[in-house]
Amino acid sequence: MLDLNEHSHRRLNPLTGEWVVVSPHRTKRPWLGQVEKPNVEALPRYDPECYLCPGNQRAGGHSNPIYSSVFAFDNDFAALRIDQPEARFDMDGLLVAEAERGVSRVICFSPDHSLTLARMEVAGIRDVIDKWAEEYAELGSRDLIGHVQIFENRGEMMGASNPHPHCQIWASESVPNEPAKEIARQNEYLERTGGCLLCDYFRIEIESGERVVCENDFFTAVVPFWAVYPFEVMVLGRDHRSSIDELGGDERNALADILKRLTTRYDNLFETPFPYSMGFHQKPTDGGEHEAVHMHAHFYPPLLRSATIRKFLVGFEILGSPQRDITPESAAERLRGLSEVHYLATGV
Ligand code: H2U
Ligand code: ZN
Image (cartoon, rainbow, N blue to C red; front, side, top):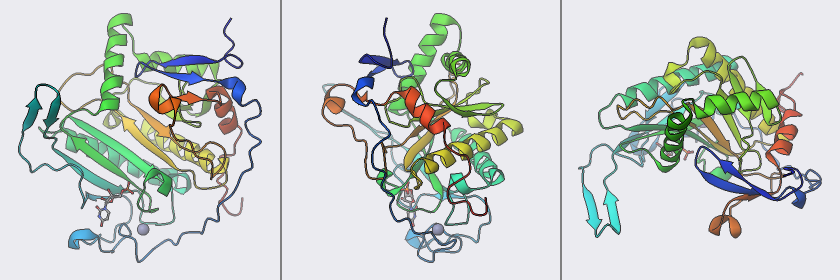
């Protein structure tokens, strides 16, 4: 009998086909680490130096309008551009390069510089979701765009250049590696079983409840069975939707609710703004059917125990497979035990 709480084992990520080594015995008492709290200065609601605040100047001579809810613009330092030729380079199939065209957008969640998803109103997050849906549909409808990646880097540690609440969208010609792997596995599962991989996985997690962090009528935040990062979470919908623009009004409100509750728990974990990279995986916009694709969000936070203990992939992890000491079950238990009232909330 394999004891998942005792024996070293490896777990399969059915979405990517990759394995993660789990060593539960290495951290018998994982939560005794000294928690160091950084001195987090309260941010101002408006920062005259911030290039994302309303009315301020950005690079390249642009000025932001005095916006009052969500505001999107073309990235002034776009990683992907549309105005280049289609071209390919191939030397004996060994040195291969292709032109990659696309569009880079920046979306400010709120005019309030001091906020985060965790501390925004659910109605404000709903506005962000509507904007995501609109951008996905608009960018995806362009002939050249085969895939739309929405992602948020939060915290300097994750490479966010600015604390103002914002995310990025990179819309590209080709489907990037991670979604490409996941789509191939979802297609293969549909062919093999006739069902949807993530609909079936969702049912297993709801039934067990062991890895569920929080849930509502439509969405669940779960530490995946195959999680690599200590507090990795997937946000999964109960109903089969392939992209965010397919979500109805109730579902969008439910997604806003779950995002707020999850990110509040994250911040409450070490009573510090919790860094992460998050993003949505949706169906490509290359004109294909992609009926197997079940949209979801991934949250990848690097922190292990406190604000100063970080999780990087090194040694065996970078040369072999990722590995973790804290089981997804115990991480979920820890997140479940936290309050959904933000530690910075006053008067509660
Ligand atoms: P990140 O915090 O995830 O880096 O996102 C901020 C983006 O804002 C970044 O991609 C862009 C950067 O290129 N940016 C502008 O478009 N205009 C500016 O004036 C500064 C930064
Ligand atoms: Zn700002």
